[in-house]
Image (cartoon, rainbow, N blue to C red; front, side):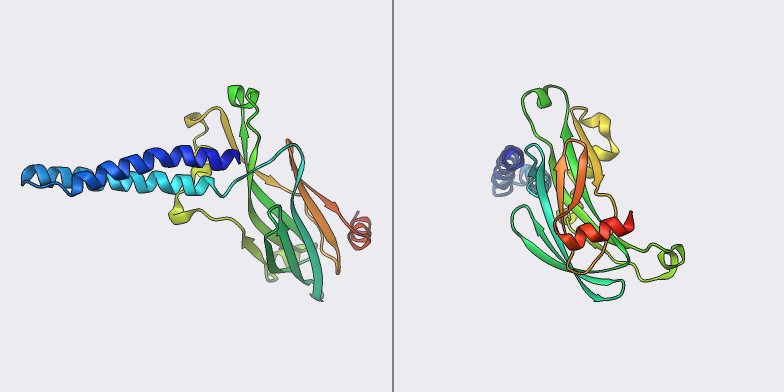
Amino acid sequence: MLYTFIALIVLVPALFIAYKALRLLFRDTWFAAWLKGTVGIALLAVSVFIGLIAWDLLGYSQALKEQNVATLTFTQIEPQHFEVKLVDAKGNEQHYKLRGDQWQLDARLVKFKGYLARFGAHPGYRLERLSGRYYRLDQELSAERTVYQLGDSLYGVDAWRWVNEHPDWLPVVDAVYGSATYLPLADKAAYEVSLSHTGLLARPLNAAAEAAVNRWQ
């Protein structure tokens, strides 16, 4: 809800600028019309850019305390090859195929500091990447790798990346990566991934997952 509200706040000036730009574009007269048209097109481009930032922010979800962000269930196709069912916190279901011995889920995290944190602004997240890896180094270097991009920014407008690369621009916000520890792939294993203030945490949900973790440890 917080990130939807922020996106709407960002969208308001975009709509206002677009309105002004369109008014300028449809006025008459010669040089003034050309100048206004140029300015109008520039304003329209700015409004589209701001609108894309608002759209990008809608891809993030608010995390209230520790909460489940994804559930993953694995079905073995053949040795070191698994089908994955990933269900996110909103109930959206996706299917992937991973190769290897272990899996990892990565997310983008947004954390607030200072007065924003004191006013109760909760961290946000967006699932970023699902990947598999091999135990053996020779396989890790030469065998087929599987990595899936889970989140994307429209037309490359990526507010999180700008804050991550230029933290001084917005010092009250931290944009960081969070990764669940690599855990073993196993037939019929189910895991839950939750988000807390320290990052992502993956836990086994059933006996097959617990047995796989115990063998791995």
